Image 1 (spheres, rainbow, N blue to C red):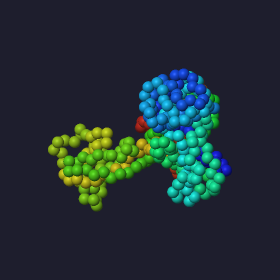
Image 2 (image 1 turned 60 degrees about the horizontal axis):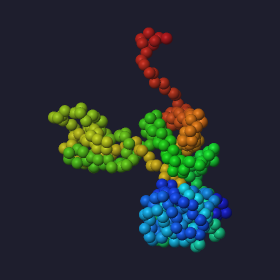
Image 3 (image 1 turned 90 degrees about the horizontal axis):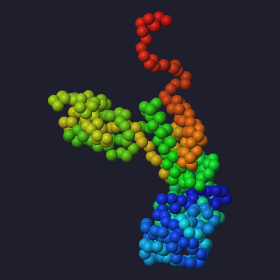
Image 4 (image 1 turned 180 degrees about the horizontal axis):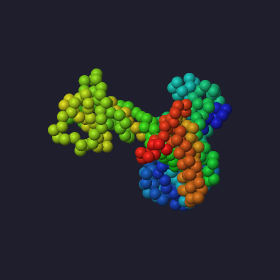
Length: 383
């Protein structure tokens, strides 16, 4: 969803992505209420269907009747508005309306449906548009999809404000890639989202490789008298630090050891504990004579950017051009333009190296230390 000025709010039409899809077997004339399709599998009665590709001139949304959708044809609750040639795609999009909501208290308030703000999906455009004539610059908006016959709604969108999405948001980066595409006929928003998140993962891993204190999370995990505990946090990637308390008061930093390095009868001391990994997310502690709690610092995987308003981490915000270059490179590869793809990827990779260099811990005012890759010989000391 986006504010495009003068309180005109638009919601991008994306329901056809990953929706059940079939094609018209024969051409259908306007004014009929039966569409003959090749396969109705995945469609359901009372669902909305989109006939045609999003943004094309005669694309329209209709609703299937309550009858069965299996077989070679589907019956609609109303007649079609346009002619549709054979092999026109038909998508089972389920929802036929978009409900525009508003909070007059900004994002701190609660969004409520706007009077006259329930709009039929305008599938012949890339966006469904609503003009909020009573809107002000301090308002905030949300939307959700509605299936009018089924009377069911989707979840709400994120907030959108008068100023729109930030420069570092998923929606804005996707928009910047589209602005530079030579052709976006085969490039969906889902593809762009995937490519942006791929590059974000690469940058995050690159940062961790040069800055051991980057992207750390913490959690407390209980372990039993057998010494074992299970890390359940989905964001856990790799251990950074491990502290243990047996009494809830005294904490000791645990040393890491291998699963096979301790002896069966080896004696351990609670004031000098050890930990080891016995699986992907299961750890053990020594000594294990009593239960306790482990305070774990770990490298985080990081959340995937899903919603349009989701933003990059602060450390990556100076490198958004690399996301755009990477997205364009993948689009070039997909459209069989390998030379262009290689050039664009090289640009993204160059920005990645700059990011690694600049994210590394360093002092701009103090002395710079150089780590020698191999020791000097005795003769070299006096050179």
